[in-house]
Length: 383
Image (cartoon, rainbow, N blue to C red; front, top):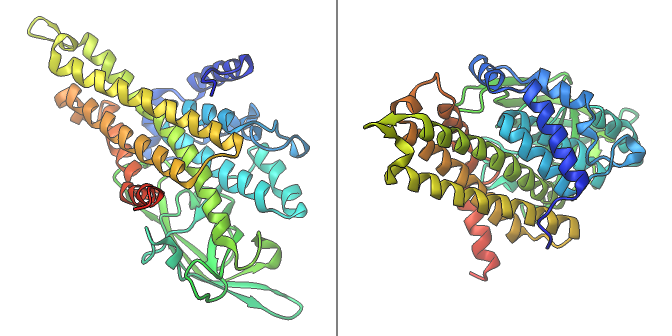
C-alpha cells in the first residue's frame, strides 16, 4: 500500500485548506456552536466550489472521486469544524453513496445532480427510542397502500436523527413486513422532510450543538412508491453498506478534529509559562503530548488504509469496526488530555478545548458504541 497522495490529491488538499481558512475560521466555528446555528455559510461555500460533487459520477455533475479523496475532504473539514464535516458527510453518504449504490435511474437523475451542486442536505433516520445499539429491532412501520394512489403510509418515531431540521431529504429505515429474523422485512425510503405528518423536535445535547440532533414523529406520513430506495424488504443489507461508508467518513472527520485539538494544546504548552518556563518543558506535559501525537498518527494511518481497502473492494466489517473504534476513542482521549494541559483554562467556555471535549464524547457513543465495535471485532476473531 502506497501511503503517499498523488500530486492532484495534494493540490486538492491545499485548495480545500485555503477555502476553509477563509470560510470556517475558529471564531466562526465557536460562534456556530455558541448560537446553536448550522455552519450554513461554510456549507454553501463548499457547494459553490464544487466539493459536493467529489464522489458523484461525472454523468451526474460530479468528479467521480475515490474513498481516499473523500477521506481527505472530511479530514480537512473536521479540522476546521467537526460539525461542518458531519453535515457534509451525511449528504455525501445518504444522498450520494446510497443513491449511487441502490437508486433507480430516475432517482439518480433527480437526486445526484442536486447533491453534486450542494443544493440539498440529507440526513439518516435509523435509531428509535427502543432500538439504539439493537438497531434492527426498529418498529417504525411503512404500510403499503393499494389502488390508484399507491404508495406507503409511515407511522412511528425516530430519535437522534441528526440534521433533520436542516435537511431536505431523510434516508429513513422502516419495517414493511415481519420476517422470521429481525433484519428481514426492512426497507429504506428517501422522504421529503417537509411532508405533512412529520413532526420534528430538537434535542438539547452536551455537544454537537451547531447542527444538533432531533427526535422525529411520523404520523400517517404518505410517501409514493418512488420514495423506496433499493429493494422492498431487503433494506438492512443496504443499511449495512451505508454504515461502512459512514464509518470511513466519521473516522476521517474525527481525526481532523482531534488534530486541531492536539495542535491547540501543543501551541498552548509552548507559550504558557509556569515556574519560569513553558509548561511543555515539564515531562508531565510533554509525555501527554507525545501520547496524543502517537494516537493521532495511528488514527490517520488507519483512516487512509481503510479508504484504500474500500477503493480496492477489500474492506471488511471487521476493518470498519477497528477504524471507527480507534479513531473515536482517540478523539475522546486527545480532547481530554487537551483539557488537562490547559488546566483551568481548558474548563472555561472562552477557550475552544471545551468544545473539543464536549463534541468528542459522542465519538464513542454515536453511530455504534465502542462496546458494539468491540463485539464486532471479537466476532471477527471467532469469539
